[in-house]
Length: 93
Image (cartoon, rainbow, N blue to C red; front, top):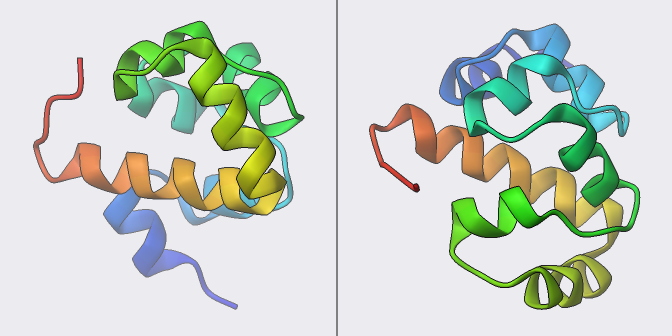
């Protein structure tokens, strides 16, 4: 599967999209969201992220509830959506 269109919308490379889909947060995604890679990886792995909470305007506990509800695959889709929104010129912080 080619991830070129998704990557273009996200503002990252197709390789970065493939890494994210496999569960590893690449530096390109953390740079796009302005959230440390380790913080995003913790979120993907089941934890919460204070910095990501700030980006989307919610508390860490609400972000943890979201993480628990949507699981790892949902989180990956969520991060793809956030990156795509960033490339449209929206300011989230």
